[in-house]
Length: 297
Image (cartoon, rainbow, N blue to C red; front, side, top):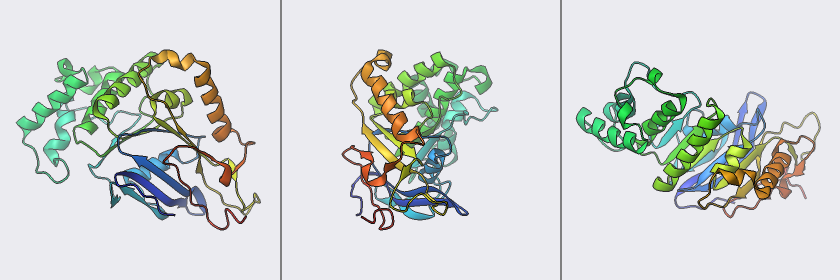
């Protein structure tokens, strides 16, 4: 089966191995533009590996990754990235950090933007991030949450087709982290951008996303479970999440707790070995192509 989606991200039949170690195993994923996907899974399952493949820092061992009709290659401005540790230049002011990409190379298909114009546009983003009064400061003069907002502005000003976020709030204290979650939701609702958000925090993933993907190496298939089976991680669950205005109180609802428990069982319990044909792929865009060896029956 070939995935069909006019606009968006397609990951099709993707494998990633390092030497003899398979990390990602025949992975399939379809993401529409404007979707907010969160990705969770056990430590070492390949979450950051998948993010690096989409970013283009690494290439699949097999399979293909397509963004809006074009096969992805090395990193470029079509894909923005925000890391856990703030990707800011300490010797540059806040406004110079945000405008740097425009001044150095401009957006894809455009000329380099003059310094005055790029700084004016950077100020518009800082106003949106509620940081305009800090434009002349340096990163060390800002709190962790403020630095991360600058890093987000630094990516957004390039107008990427997809914004990748790798544990972006992991280094923040709990109160700041929750503030940043609400800020990111507000920003996503305003811009309807495509977000791919990796986190180890199940509560964060279920609160933020319109869709939660569970990547795990804990499953089985018709290849068996002997020592000779070199099985990598797959998306074992793909949940569509409701998206309507709500506050942080939803985190304390029974339904929210039940979802967290279900995800923990589906992806994090080594004893819960679903067969690949039985994965909980209920999202309308979910698809899976199993090989003959994986599904002999």
